Length: 372
Image 1 (cartoon, rainbow, N blue to C red):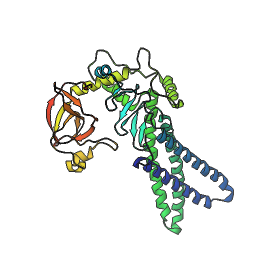
Image 2: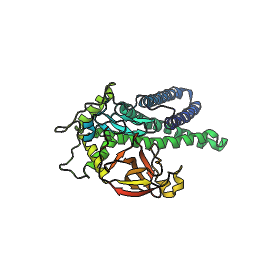
Image 3: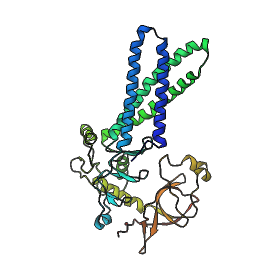
Image 4: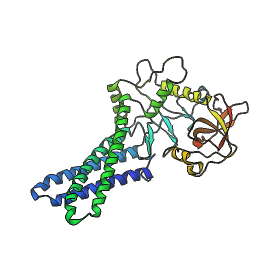
Protein backbone atom coordinates (compact mmCIF):
# COMPACT_ATOMS: atom_id res chain seq x y z
CA UNK A 1 0.00 0.00 0.00
CA UNK A 2 1.25 3.46 -0.81
CA UNK A 3 2.43 6.00 1.75
CA UNK A 4 3.31 9.67 1.93
CA UNK A 5 7.03 9.08 2.60
CA UNK A 6 7.96 8.87 -1.07
CA UNK A 7 9.25 11.42 -3.55
CA UNK A 8 5.93 11.44 -5.44
CA UNK A 9 3.54 12.46 -2.60
CA UNK A 10 6.20 14.74 -1.10
CA UNK A 11 6.59 16.54 -4.44
CA UNK A 12 2.81 16.80 -4.84
CA UNK A 13 2.36 18.24 -1.35
CA UNK A 14 5.28 20.60 -1.97
CA UNK A 15 3.65 21.95 -5.13
CA UNK A 16 0.31 22.39 -3.38
CA UNK A 17 2.00 24.19 -0.47
CA UNK A 18 3.95 26.48 -2.80
CA UNK A 19 0.98 27.50 -4.93
CA UNK A 20 -1.29 27.90 -1.88
CA UNK A 21 1.32 29.79 0.13
CA UNK A 22 2.19 32.28 -2.61
CA UNK A 23 -1.49 32.83 -3.48
CA UNK A 24 -2.47 33.35 0.18
CA UNK A 25 0.40 35.77 0.81
CA UNK A 26 -0.44 37.69 -2.35
CA UNK A 27 -4.11 37.82 -1.37
CA UNK A 28 -3.25 39.25 2.05
CA UNK A 29 -1.07 41.90 0.43
CA UNK A 30 -3.93 42.86 -1.86
CA UNK A 31 -6.36 42.97 1.07
CA UNK A 32 -4.14 45.46 2.85
CA UNK A 33 -4.32 47.78 -0.16
CA UNK A 34 -8.12 47.66 -0.43
CA UNK A 35 -10.58 50.10 1.06
CA UNK A 36 -12.10 48.85 4.37
CA UNK A 37 -15.58 48.49 2.87
CA UNK A 38 -14.23 46.16 0.12
CA UNK A 39 -12.33 43.83 2.43
CA UNK A 40 -15.14 41.56 3.80
CA UNK A 41 -15.95 40.12 0.36
CA UNK A 42 -12.28 39.45 -0.36
CA UNK A 43 -11.87 37.80 3.04
CA UNK A 44 -14.75 35.45 2.20
CA UNK A 45 -13.08 34.61 -1.13
CA UNK A 46 -9.80 33.86 0.65
CA UNK A 47 -11.49 31.60 3.22
CA UNK A 48 -13.34 29.73 0.47
CA UNK A 49 -10.05 29.28 -1.39
CA UNK A 50 -8.38 27.81 1.69
CA UNK A 51 -11.36 25.48 2.26
CA UNK A 52 -11.07 24.37 -1.38
CA UNK A 53 -7.40 23.55 -0.84
CA UNK A 54 -8.33 21.52 2.23
CA UNK A 55 -10.73 19.55 0.02
CA UNK A 56 -7.93 18.90 -2.46
CA UNK A 57 -5.73 17.60 0.34
CA UNK A 58 -8.54 15.38 1.60
CA UNK A 59 -9.08 13.74 -1.78
CA UNK A 60 -5.33 13.32 -2.22
CA UNK A 61 -4.91 11.71 1.20
CA UNK A 62 -7.82 9.34 0.62
CA UNK A 63 -6.46 8.28 -2.76
CA UNK A 64 -3.15 7.44 -1.08
CA UNK A 65 -4.54 5.75 2.04
CA UNK A 66 -7.31 3.71 0.42
CA UNK A 67 -5.14 2.33 -2.34
CA UNK A 68 -6.59 0.42 -5.29
CA UNK A 69 -7.85 -2.48 -3.20
CA UNK A 70 -6.18 -5.86 -2.99
CA UNK A 71 -7.86 -9.17 -3.86
CA UNK A 72 -9.40 -10.63 -0.71
CA UNK A 73 -10.60 -14.00 -1.96
CA UNK A 74 -7.28 -15.13 -3.29
CA UNK A 75 -6.40 -18.80 -3.44
CA UNK A 76 -3.68 -20.84 -5.00
CA UNK A 77 -4.51 -22.28 -8.41
CA UNK A 78 -4.59 -26.02 -8.74
CA UNK A 79 -2.55 -27.75 -11.42
CA UNK A 80 -5.40 -27.89 -13.94
CA UNK A 81 -6.02 -24.13 -13.74
CA UNK A 82 -2.35 -23.30 -14.06
CA UNK A 83 -1.85 -25.60 -17.05
CA UNK A 84 -4.93 -24.21 -18.75
CA UNK A 85 -3.42 -20.73 -18.66
CA UNK A 86 -6.52 -19.19 -17.09
CA UNK A 87 -6.36 -15.40 -17.40
CA UNK A 88 -7.18 -14.90 -13.73
CA UNK A 89 -3.95 -16.59 -12.69
CA UNK A 90 -1.15 -14.28 -11.52
CA UNK A 91 2.32 -15.61 -12.32
CA UNK A 92 4.00 -13.35 -9.75
CA UNK A 93 1.63 -14.13 -6.86
CA UNK A 94 1.01 -17.72 -8.04
CA UNK A 95 -2.66 -17.28 -7.15
CA UNK A 96 -6.03 -16.90 -8.80
CA UNK A 97 -7.21 -13.27 -8.67
CA UNK A 98 -10.59 -11.65 -9.48
CA UNK A 99 -11.47 -10.38 -12.96
CA UNK A 100 -9.87 -7.05 -13.94
CA UNK A 101 -7.18 -7.42 -11.26
CA UNK A 102 -3.57 -7.04 -12.37
CA UNK A 103 -0.17 -7.37 -10.78
CA UNK A 104 1.75 -4.14 -10.24
CA UNK A 105 5.51 -4.58 -10.53
CA UNK A 106 6.14 -1.47 -8.41
CA UNK A 107 3.78 -2.38 -5.56
CA UNK A 108 4.62 -6.09 -6.00
CA UNK A 109 0.96 -6.94 -5.42
CA UNK A 110 -2.24 -7.38 -7.39
CA UNK A 111 -4.66 -4.44 -7.57
CA UNK A 112 -8.42 -4.56 -8.11
CA UNK A 113 -9.39 -3.04 -11.47
CA UNK A 114 -5.88 -1.66 -11.86
CA UNK A 115 -5.74 1.37 -14.14
CA UNK A 116 -2.10 2.39 -13.70
CA UNK A 117 0.54 2.94 -11.05
CA UNK A 118 0.75 6.63 -10.17
CA UNK A 119 4.07 7.68 -8.61
CA UNK A 120 2.52 10.97 -7.44
CA UNK A 121 0.29 9.10 -4.96
CA UNK A 122 2.81 6.25 -4.54
CA UNK A 123 0.26 3.55 -5.26
CA UNK A 124 -1.96 2.20 -8.02
CA UNK A 125 -5.23 3.71 -9.16
CA UNK A 126 -7.90 1.03 -8.91
CA UNK A 127 -11.37 0.08 -7.74
CA UNK A 128 -11.18 1.54 -4.23
CA UNK A 129 -9.42 4.86 -4.79
CA UNK A 130 -10.35 5.79 -8.37
CA UNK A 131 -13.25 8.00 -7.21
CA UNK A 132 -11.06 10.02 -4.82
CA UNK A 133 -8.27 10.13 -7.39
CA UNK A 134 -10.67 11.57 -9.96
CA UNK A 135 -11.97 14.11 -7.42
CA UNK A 136 -8.37 15.17 -6.76
CA UNK A 137 -7.73 15.54 -10.50
CA UNK A 138 -10.82 17.71 -10.91
CA UNK A 139 -10.41 19.95 -7.85
CA UNK A 140 -6.64 20.56 -8.14
CA UNK A 141 -6.75 22.36 -11.53
CA UNK A 142 -9.73 24.48 -10.39
CA UNK A 143 -7.83 25.45 -7.26
CA UNK A 144 -4.78 26.33 -9.35
CA UNK A 145 -6.91 28.47 -11.66
CA UNK A 146 -8.11 30.47 -8.66
CA UNK A 147 -4.59 30.71 -7.25
CA UNK A 148 -3.25 31.74 -10.64
CA UNK A 149 -5.82 34.54 -10.87
CA UNK A 150 -4.86 35.83 -7.42
CA UNK A 151 -1.18 35.78 -8.35
CA UNK A 152 -1.83 37.46 -11.70
CA UNK A 153 -3.76 40.29 -10.02
CA UNK A 154 -1.02 40.67 -7.43
CA UNK A 155 1.72 40.81 -10.07
CA UNK A 156 -0.27 43.42 -11.99
CA UNK A 157 -0.60 45.45 -8.81
CA UNK A 158 3.12 45.13 -8.12
CA UNK A 159 3.98 46.06 -11.71
CA UNK A 160 2.29 49.39 -11.22
CA UNK A 161 3.82 49.84 -7.75
CA UNK A 162 7.40 48.77 -8.50
CA UNK A 163 8.14 52.09 -10.22
CA UNK A 164 8.34 53.54 -6.73
CA UNK A 165 9.52 50.56 -4.67
CA UNK A 166 11.47 48.35 -7.07
CA UNK A 167 11.13 44.54 -7.32
CA UNK A 168 10.86 42.52 -4.12
CA UNK A 169 11.61 38.81 -3.39
CA UNK A 170 7.88 38.22 -2.97
CA UNK A 171 7.38 39.25 -6.60
CA UNK A 172 9.67 36.44 -7.80
CA UNK A 173 7.92 33.99 -5.46
CA UNK A 174 4.54 35.00 -6.89
CA UNK A 175 5.86 34.58 -10.43
CA UNK A 176 7.18 31.10 -9.56
CA UNK A 177 3.84 30.18 -7.97
CA UNK A 178 2.01 31.39 -11.08
CA UNK A 179 4.19 29.17 -13.28
CA UNK A 180 3.47 26.16 -11.06
CA UNK A 181 -0.26 26.90 -11.10
CA UNK A 182 -0.33 27.04 -14.90
CA UNK A 183 1.70 23.83 -15.20
CA UNK A 184 -0.51 21.92 -12.75
CA UNK A 185 -3.68 23.15 -14.46
CA UNK A 186 -2.52 21.86 -17.85
CA UNK A 187 -0.93 18.59 -16.70
CA UNK A 188 -3.45 17.49 -14.06
CA UNK A 189 -6.39 18.83 -16.07
CA UNK A 190 -5.27 16.72 -19.04
CA UNK A 191 -5.04 13.63 -16.85
CA UNK A 192 -8.53 14.36 -15.51
CA UNK A 193 -9.88 14.36 -19.07
CA UNK A 194 -8.19 11.00 -19.71
CA UNK A 195 -9.75 9.55 -16.56
CA UNK A 196 -13.21 10.86 -17.45
CA UNK A 197 -13.00 9.29 -20.89
CA UNK A 198 -11.88 5.99 -19.35
CA UNK A 199 -14.79 6.03 -16.89
CA UNK A 200 -17.19 6.82 -19.73
CA UNK A 201 -15.95 3.66 -21.51
CA UNK A 202 -15.68 1.64 -18.28
CA UNK A 203 -12.19 0.72 -19.41
CA UNK A 204 -8.88 0.97 -17.57
CA UNK A 205 -5.65 1.97 -19.25
CA UNK A 206 -4.48 -1.66 -19.19
CA UNK A 207 -7.78 -2.92 -20.62
CA UNK A 208 -7.60 -0.36 -23.43
CA UNK A 209 -4.21 -1.76 -24.41
CA UNK A 210 -5.46 -5.37 -24.25
CA UNK A 211 -8.52 -4.43 -26.31
CA UNK A 212 -6.30 -2.88 -28.98
CA UNK A 213 -4.02 -5.93 -29.08
CA UNK A 214 -7.03 -8.26 -29.35
CA UNK A 215 -7.75 -6.89 -32.81
CA UNK A 216 -4.16 -7.45 -33.96
CA UNK A 217 -3.55 -11.07 -33.04
CA UNK A 218 -4.96 -13.98 -35.10
CA UNK A 219 -8.32 -15.14 -33.77
CA UNK A 220 -11.39 -17.08 -34.93
CA UNK A 221 -13.98 -14.39 -34.12
CA UNK A 222 -13.93 -10.62 -33.39
CA UNK A 223 -13.23 -9.66 -29.79
CA UNK A 224 -16.02 -7.85 -27.94
CA UNK A 225 -14.98 -5.76 -24.93
CA UNK A 226 -17.16 -7.23 -22.15
CA UNK A 227 -17.40 -4.31 -19.71
CA UNK A 228 -18.88 -1.63 -21.96
CA UNK A 229 -22.47 -1.15 -20.71
CA UNK A 230 -23.32 2.07 -22.51
CA UNK A 231 -22.47 5.53 -21.18
CA UNK A 232 -25.01 5.62 -18.32
CA UNK A 233 -24.44 1.98 -17.46
CA UNK A 234 -20.71 2.66 -17.22
CA UNK A 235 -21.33 5.57 -14.83
CA UNK A 236 -23.56 3.39 -12.65
CA UNK A 237 -20.87 0.71 -12.54
CA UNK A 238 -18.26 3.31 -11.56
CA UNK A 239 -20.52 4.63 -8.79
CA UNK A 240 -21.14 1.09 -7.53
CA UNK A 241 -17.44 0.38 -7.08
CA UNK A 242 -16.80 3.75 -5.38
CA UNK A 243 -19.80 3.60 -3.05
CA UNK A 244 -19.12 0.12 -1.67
CA UNK A 245 -16.18 0.19 0.82
CA UNK A 246 -16.15 -3.63 0.88
CA UNK A 247 -16.16 -4.12 -2.88
CA UNK A 248 -14.08 -7.24 -3.60
CA UNK A 249 -13.91 -6.98 -7.40
CA UNK A 250 -15.19 -10.53 -7.96
CA UNK A 251 -18.45 -9.78 -9.80
CA UNK A 252 -18.62 -7.15 -12.55
CA UNK A 253 -21.53 -6.28 -14.78
CA UNK A 254 -20.89 -7.36 -18.37
CA UNK A 255 -22.47 -6.67 -21.75
CA UNK A 256 -25.04 -9.07 -23.14
CA UNK A 257 -23.49 -12.26 -24.47
CA UNK A 258 -20.18 -11.72 -22.63
CA UNK A 259 -18.71 -13.48 -19.63
CA UNK A 260 -16.91 -12.11 -16.61
CA UNK A 261 -13.82 -14.14 -17.54
CA UNK A 262 -13.63 -13.00 -21.19
CA UNK A 263 -11.03 -10.29 -20.55
CA UNK A 264 -8.82 -12.56 -18.47
CA UNK A 265 -8.97 -15.31 -21.08
CA UNK A 266 -8.01 -12.81 -23.78
CA UNK A 267 -5.06 -11.60 -21.70
CA UNK A 268 -3.88 -15.19 -21.23
CA UNK A 269 -4.13 -15.82 -24.98
CA UNK A 270 -2.18 -12.63 -25.71
CA UNK A 271 0.47 -13.62 -23.19
CA UNK A 272 1.00 -16.92 -24.97
CA UNK A 273 0.96 -15.16 -28.33
CA UNK A 274 3.69 -12.75 -27.22
CA UNK A 275 5.78 -15.56 -25.80
CA UNK A 276 5.48 -17.42 -29.09
CA UNK A 277 7.20 -14.54 -30.88
CA UNK A 278 9.63 -13.68 -28.07
CA UNK A 279 13.35 -14.31 -28.36
CA UNK A 280 15.44 -15.83 -25.60
CA UNK A 281 18.76 -14.05 -25.13
CA UNK A 282 21.74 -14.85 -22.94
CA UNK A 283 23.24 -12.15 -20.73
CA UNK A 284 26.86 -11.37 -21.67
CA UNK A 285 27.33 -8.22 -19.57
CA UNK A 286 25.76 -6.84 -16.39
CA UNK A 287 23.50 -3.80 -16.68
CA UNK A 288 25.21 -0.44 -16.08
CA UNK A 289 24.49 1.55 -12.94
CA UNK A 290 23.16 4.39 -15.10
CA UNK A 291 21.84 4.53 -18.67
CA UNK A 292 24.38 7.30 -19.43
CA UNK A 293 27.03 4.59 -19.75
CA UNK A 294 25.07 3.01 -22.62
CA UNK A 295 24.92 6.24 -24.62
CA UNK A 296 22.66 9.17 -25.39
CA UNK A 297 19.91 7.15 -27.11
CA UNK A 298 19.54 4.72 -24.20
CA UNK A 299 19.43 7.65 -21.76
CA UNK A 300 16.80 9.63 -23.66
CA UNK A 301 14.63 6.54 -24.27
CA UNK A 302 15.03 5.12 -20.76
CA UNK A 303 11.78 3.74 -19.22
CA UNK A 304 9.80 6.22 -17.18
CA UNK A 305 9.84 6.83 -13.45
CA UNK A 306 8.46 3.92 -11.47
CA UNK A 307 9.20 1.33 -14.16
CA UNK A 308 11.06 -1.76 -12.96
CA UNK A 309 14.52 -2.42 -14.38
CA UNK A 310 16.24 -5.78 -13.92
CA UNK A 311 19.91 -6.71 -13.75
CA UNK A 312 20.28 -10.42 -14.60
CA UNK A 313 23.59 -12.14 -14.00
CA UNK A 314 26.01 -13.05 -16.77
CA UNK A 315 25.01 -16.39 -18.27
CA UNK A 316 21.34 -16.11 -17.29
CA UNK A 317 18.65 -16.27 -19.97
CA UNK A 318 16.05 -13.58 -20.58
CA UNK A 319 12.91 -13.96 -22.67
CA UNK A 320 12.56 -10.57 -24.39
CA UNK A 321 9.11 -9.61 -25.68
CA UNK A 322 10.08 -6.50 -27.57
CA UNK A 323 13.00 -4.16 -28.18
CA UNK A 324 12.86 -0.42 -28.85
CA UNK A 325 15.73 2.07 -28.82
CA UNK A 326 18.06 -0.41 -27.16
CA UNK A 327 15.65 -1.25 -24.32
CA UNK A 328 13.74 -4.51 -24.05
CA UNK A 329 11.05 -5.82 -21.75
CA UNK A 330 11.51 -9.38 -20.59
CA UNK A 331 11.58 -12.02 -17.88
CA UNK A 332 14.39 -14.24 -16.60
CA UNK A 333 13.85 -17.88 -17.58
CA UNK A 334 15.62 -21.20 -17.12
CA UNK A 335 15.66 -24.17 -19.53
CA UNK A 336 13.49 -27.23 -18.89
CA UNK A 337 14.89 -30.74 -19.16
CA UNK A 338 12.43 -31.67 -21.87
CA UNK A 339 13.03 -28.48 -23.88
CA UNK A 340 11.54 -25.01 -23.68
CA UNK A 341 11.78 -22.49 -20.88
CA UNK A 342 10.15 -21.77 -17.54
CA UNK A 343 9.97 -18.58 -15.47
CA UNK A 344 12.34 -18.39 -12.52
CA UNK A 345 10.92 -18.07 -9.01
CA UNK A 346 10.59 -15.48 -7.64
CA UNK A 347 9.64 -13.80 -10.92
CA UNK A 348 12.23 -11.37 -12.28
CA UNK A 349 10.53 -9.22 -14.92
CA UNK A 350 11.18 -5.70 -16.18
CA UNK A 351 13.16 -3.51 -18.57
CA UNK A 352 16.80 -4.06 -19.47
CA UNK A 353 19.35 -2.82 -21.99
CA UNK A 354 19.62 -5.37 -24.79
CA UNK A 355 22.16 -4.10 -27.31
CA UNK A 356 25.65 -5.00 -26.16
CA UNK A 357 24.46 -6.59 -22.93
CA UNK A 358 22.70 -9.69 -24.27
CA UNK A 359 23.25 -12.02 -27.23
CA UNK A 360 20.57 -13.68 -29.35
CA UNK A 361 20.10 -17.35 -28.58
CA UNK A 362 17.00 -18.76 -30.28
CA UNK A 363 13.36 -18.33 -31.11
CA UNK A 364 11.24 -20.42 -28.79
CA UNK A 365 7.65 -21.68 -28.89
CA UNK A 366 5.34 -20.74 -26.00
CA UNK A 367 5.91 -22.86 -22.91
CA UNK A 368 3.68 -23.68 -19.99
CA UNK A 369 4.74 -22.80 -16.49
CA UNK A 370 6.05 -25.88 -14.74
CA UNK A 371 3.48 -27.01 -12.18
CA UNK A 372 4.76 -28.66 -9.05
